Length: 419
Image (cartoon, rainbow, N blue to C red; front, top):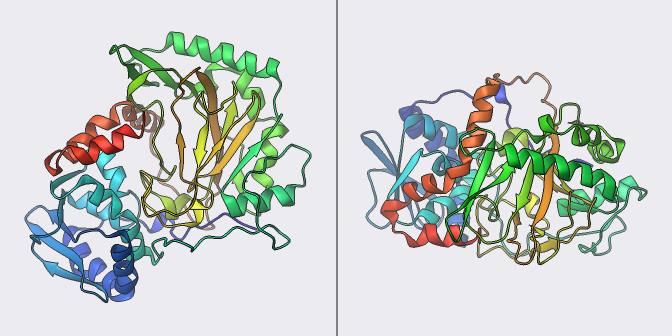
């Protein structure tokens, strides 16, 4: 079994010029995958799209059978303005429509911001040949061919093959009774101390505001560096066995971790993340699927912000930010006790529900796929990686800016999902 769905190598990615994309990449994609992408566009009921790069514009629309490519803007569609490097990253799946917005690399000048985000699976159909998900396309089967029980949870002594099959089918796991209350108390103490040390400008934390405007630290980046109690657990066999569930080369040798607290009454900022995939900023075809592991430092139920997942969404080409209204797969809340683990594939749609009665704490870590044979990754300085991660604390301002000319309602609807 495998959850590896990579189709691209890092070493093959290069910077494409605007005219190379407009004159070669787009015509070739339309020729090869135009009917598939047009079907997805019709299913999602999205408008045509014009891409403006410097002084040149091309447009994509459905003619009833396939996508057609034309020069110039369309009067009846959405219009997105971006630069040549952003266009290059988009067509090569290095960044997504939402990833561009999150990093102030796109500006909507006509149409809705949600139209831009909605085009993401259509782009993946066009450039990667992945059909846009349609209702009924995903089913769930147990190893014996019966219907899979999506409400099931597991324990450490369960059959690994059975656990792995569930993960492959559903894209998530809930593993009970992994760590003791005492172990979680030690991690909790370290997290409290890290939150107390955090400062809004430290480049190592995310902040969110309550209804009075007060700002709170809600995520400690690189938390593993501040907690010896956590570091010992990350290398513990009670986590490491998860890397061997599938036939993939998932490495757990260099595991980082982030510590999160979910306060009550948060109104702004990225505390309770809306529906998203971990590859939602880009890189799906280079990285997925890895595994994201949540360590329940405190339990999480329906009143304290349990993790939501959409079973099977790791097998579906859907938009990577927000929950598409056309998505037919029902979401689940994973209610955990202290010391439980949640596991989800990096391409599984998930969200943090807002706590309404009590706060909760959780630590996130995970495994990545090893590089494909012959592949190599350009090394990004660690300081830049950390700075890029820290900047996401105010990402909603940049998303709002990207959609400002499209009207406020689309962004407000997206923002409300975090509440």
